[in-house]
Length: 372
Image 1: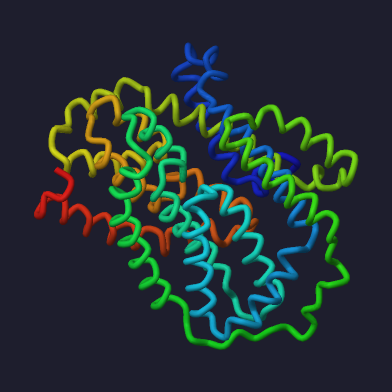
Image 2: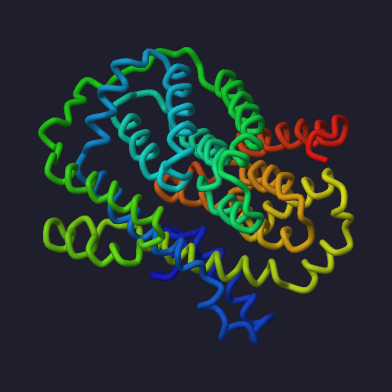
């Protein structure tokens, strides 16, 4: 009975654990290398973010901020436009994962004080941070990898990605205009969170977040992480108890699973059989490989077979908006939301959006030779 409850509570984690067991049996010789398959820099970064943003959430700051936003936004549509654009802008310099740790608790705070069901807005925010983070070389892991591999200038990267980001954001806003209604937002009678607001915890967590972002940019997060642990243990140990530690385990297992899949001989042989000399083929392979192994492993894999970095970048960033597993940011978002219904409804919006944007961009590549 205990195992059944765990599986129900951690259904997604259970799926990847089962996949790992299968892969461990088939590729048992790889087990000794599992620690090397994990991107420990990402795990370290995620650990600090989970602790700090849990502190922000426990301060009840997002509940208080939610009240102020609700007073400015009259309808579901205006609220959706505001949070989608806010998410995209924030992710261009805060990266996609950090932005999710800010906007999703904010959205949950809004949901808690209104009668309207805006839970699907989290799906749109997730797509939005995938879009916004595509603009800069440091916006997401796949861009960082490509930026370093081909030694592209920061400004050149932004110029090349700007048309894609504007196009993707415009299409997302059209989707939001269709999906969200002009229904007025109905506020619950009692929305005051002022008594629950913990200002000292907010100040501490905000300071920690700013410092941590600096250390992340300097790639020194491992040195500040023990300090963060110590500060929260001394000041408010309840924060650490409420951290979603299962999310870290999920990421560790995902890194192992996808690394094994992406390096399997059958995958390499399949890609070798494709003609990656043409931009349209590179784009399609990048897009659809992202659906199978997520866009970060897909980026590493495809970069071994072609030097067309811009098409790869377009493909893996567009591809991150398809299936849940196509981007690790998608998994982070739905884990933070803690809403099982969103796992089921995510593809209701992400797949139509993905197919439309992928199809239009592919048409431009084929007929107008824009990336050849």
